[in-house]
Image 1 (tube, rainbow, N blue to C red):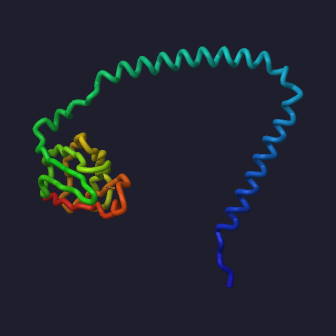
Image 2 (image 1 turned 30 degrees about the vertical axis):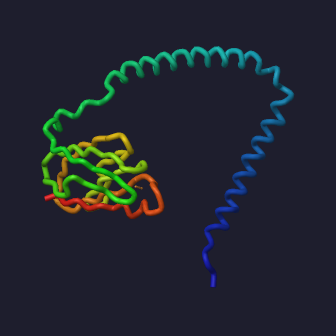
Length: 176
Ligand code: CUA
């Protein structure tokens, strides 16, 4: 009986491609040694362009940083000003929600923190599509704004490896 082994062709292809890359490098190295002085003019010009490019890039990025940093911390989105506040606490290994039932079309502000280590909170709909996520951090609160569009059982999963039972940090909430 013939069994298909994908490992072996992968190895052969890797070896062939690696050898090809090595040969090309060796060829370039061998041929460039004797002609180093030919490049002095190009080198000088290149370094000059690089300096100008660096100054332009640095100025643009510095300007953009100062221009955008004044927006921090981001305001609550206007449509969530009157949102229902929900407290969420992560712990090894579970989720503690101040309320478990939610309504379609209502606006919620989830204030997420952690009792112990860093976790990641992910809100998944019934098709296991990720709706939104944020970090659950000790001594810090992150807020995510959610409006559920469909009724159903939503899953809350931990998105950051936080210990041996990380994969068990699953919680369900109901949206009616
Ligand atoms: Cu909590 Cu992974």
